Image (cartoon, rainbow, N blue to C red; front, side, top):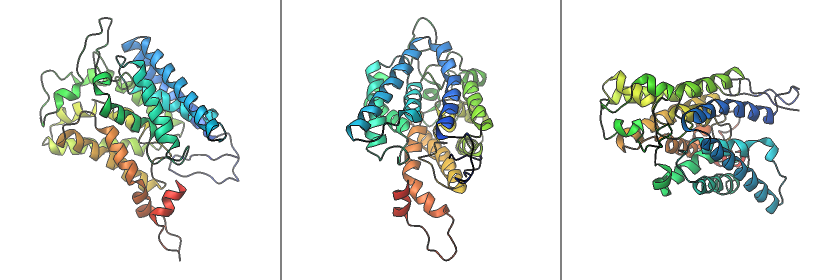
Length: 328
């Protein structure tokens, strides 16, 4: 028997029989990942496929080894390790050495996923945590942005030009349509084309894999925060919205089942928090990107959000945080 996601954060009871297995859901995510992967191949060439393949194989092997070593059932058929490896690779530039990809996979699968309790019991999104730690410790190797094209010219991301407490777009900031389509942009290979990411999100919404309000609230909260900071400079706020990994994270990471709250209301608070924290990190700390750190911060707040938003059964006491953590 299987459960079906209804699009509003609930599942039908186990007495409902249908073909919507967890593996089927993960296959839909893999199909959606083909869209940004197509953009990576178009803009950065076939080496991006080498990085993605390496990351997927490494994650699957690590998952198998850990589960065999700890005498657990091998669950690579659930495809979560494949998704983790694929997502992590897309967050890196094609200039990143393959050994940095392998280190990121080790962090995601061994340190975050399995030391954190294994599938379904993670507090933090493994791919996001791995990307944040890679940025923290291996920045010289994974932030050498390369512009699309055969010449492999070193460049910067648009967020560099938008930082340093500015409230105006600089002359080096690309036009909005280039940011949207991903033309001539350096940066991680999977976040370049916002059009392809939105198509991927639309696919997941149509297949009822993700709740459409979650990415919408993340992006809206971020945009409003930047608007207020910039004194309603819509050009500046739009450039921020279309730069960095915000849209990619809103589609694939903020919507993660395991590391987001249990209730619909909690998921909405979580999404808004991710958007606002990301905006604050970009503005106050001048931190390019920021969405990865924002997601990790909000992941840690999930038990508290669950406690505030969990429906209380009549006559029962409010659920304690420790009970929520035990059930994650």
